Length: 192
Image (tube, rainbow, N blue to C red; front, side, top):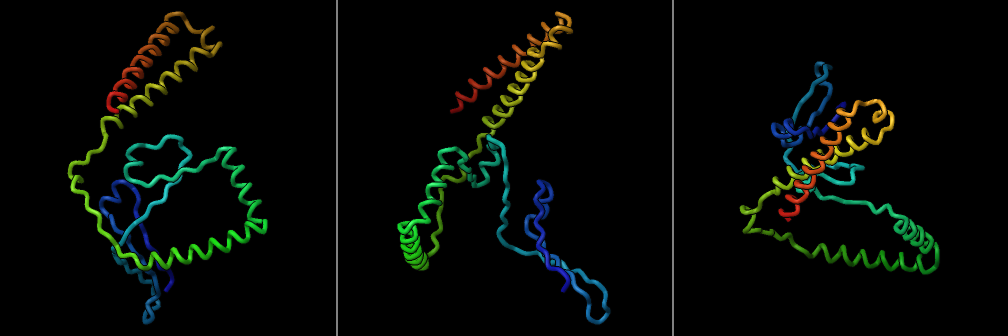
């Protein structure tokens, strides 16, 4: 055998056509010595792991994923350093040994548990907040336009060189974008 690969397609359209992982095995045929590829379709769960530096996540993505966030505050860093220092003490070593015993007991308890199917009778009635998502996307766009107009209008070179009618038009467009952003913000608040 030369290679054994599991291929998972993650693109939106390709994932619709190929929702299960593909398995590709490549080997040399012992009789002919030629390379041979065989494909197998594998049933099973698929996991996609994404990372981002974005502060706000898309609501559609949060609806489909488990989101884990990292606390990067100075207070959290100090807590981490304190725990690291405490681990090097006698009390820290004793606590580590006690933790190992506790984890052993918890693992033994987990072995006694049976799977439990959970049913949600209201599942057919659940909906996705698509109107809120649409409004939030429009709000972000309007806020981006406001920032663009603010950057232009605060640029001294632009203001000194542009004719007054251009400046007036930019201020008017900025006001329209701000009014739109306010309306969208109010609509989002009404949705709850």
